[in-house]
Length: 174
Image (cartoon, rainbow, N blue to C red):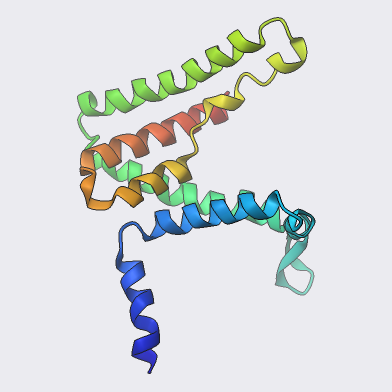
């Protein structure tokens, strides 16, 4: 009986595209809920506080802060470890191969920022936001890649992952 219930789940999680499908589904649901009558519930849930610790020793953060400050830190930690491995012994260990994603990331930061400045030139109130379009959403970039699965060559996956990480690191510095 348990085999019948768990078989579809085991098959789904063996798919390379599973993480991308979950991310896409979650994003669509979040957009629908946040723009519907359930938006008040959605945003109040994000503002609820959760305590993780023992007695009075621990962290009390809102759900939004747990997502942004804890889970995203873990996500970036693992992605950065993967890129470090690629720089040390993988596809990016050669300086010629590493240079392309670095240059692409710099262009990926500069071009959107220049467009923003061009569109908002003269408006001192909005000019302060020039750095906002500089960051790549790495989670969605990797999610789209995982949807494509084995049809995408490893070198392209490494390139896009490196580009997104370098771009995000540059956006943090800005």
